[in-house]
Structure formats: C-alpha cells, structure tokens
Length: 200
Ligand SMILES: C[S@@+](CC[C@H](N)C(=O)[O-])C[C@H]1O[C@@H](n2cnc3c(N)ncnc32)[C@H](O)[C@@H]1O
Image (tube, rainbow, N blue to C red):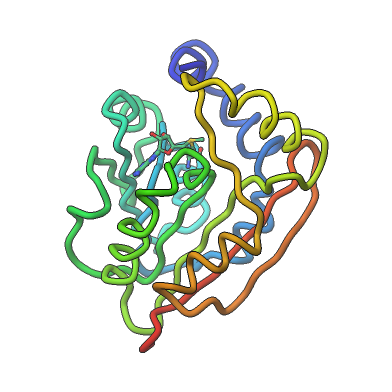
C-alpha cells in the first residue's frame, strides 16, 4: 500500500497530505473530546492518532487495525506516551471508552460485516460516551462519483461508499444518532455521524 512506502520514505508528506489535504482536522478537533479515552478503529499507520494525541495530552488513545502491517509502522513513526497501537478486531476488544472513532474505515468494510462492528461499538461505549464516523460520501461530488463508478468496480480495490442517509439508517439500528453533518471540502465530499448508546 502506498502509505506504507510513504511513511518510511516521506513521513512528513504523508502526515501533511492526510491531515491538511484529505482530512479536516479542525472539524475533527471540534467533534472529538480533548481528554478521556478514545478507541480509534482502523488507525492505519497512526497519522491521525499522532495529531490528536500531540494536541491533547490528556486524551488516552488506543488505535486498532485489522491490517497487521500497519501496527509496527504506527509504533515506530507515531509513538507518543498517550497512544498505543494493536492489531485487533473491534469484536475482540474489551473495556469501555469515552469515544470511538472511525475515520474512512466503513468504505473498506463489506456491508455484511457492518452490523457486527456497530454492535461491538455499542458495547464498548461508556454511558454518555459517543462514536464518531467520518467517511467519504457516495455521489456527493465528482471524486466520489468517480470512486463509486470506476475504482469500486475492481474487486482488488473494493470500496463500498455510502451516503449519509443510508449510513445513518444502519447506525440507528445499534445506536442513537445525535448529530449528522455533510460537508464538501476539496477533494472529497464527506459526512460525519455522531451517535451514543441507546440507553446512554
Ligand atoms: C483509509 S485507511 C484510514 C486509516 C486512518 N483511519 C486514517 O484516517 O488515516 C482505512 C483503514 O481501515 C482499516 N480497516 C478496514 N476494515 C477494518 C476493520 N473491520 N477493523 C479495523 N480496521 C479496519 C484498514 O486496514 C485501513 O488501515
């Protein structure tokens, strides 16, 4: 994967590209807690966790990913005292967190596996805690149209983009959706969904 090569050869570029070009970190900082515990599901090589942990020393972050190759790279290049990384499925995580984060993860998850992930997410949230999903929106602009029509047609690069409304319906099966937002910021149209436990 491109990010594995980039992190070793030009980590500064990957960090800049991810946090200034493809993500809106200002928006994420607004939507995420500055302290407490956060489980980042699909942490990749840890670019976002590094940025969050550096800005919020009182936020304790646990980053997990099912792709084993990511984890040693995250540990080597994005270590901080308040972050740890682990190769683990969310279904196997124990404990409870103030916040669960999914950044650009669900478009890699085949629809058939999504309920099990959201069920685990509901179990892992503390009462009063919340989950935040940020993803690329389907058919929200020319880039998502192109991804949807061309890239997702190739099994080797399968992606499953959703629109906000369909994702909200899915999340609502397991959690109470408390905030949604659609935003366009070049190059990707994106959506945010914030949800809490149904009994929280
Ligand atoms: C586009 S990357 C995003 C990485 C990171 N969240 C970021 O924003 O830089 C998507 C990541 O999700 C991970 N992923 C996909 N399905 C997953 C699952 N079911 N559980 C955990 N991680 C998953 C992939 O291995 C990949 O590292």
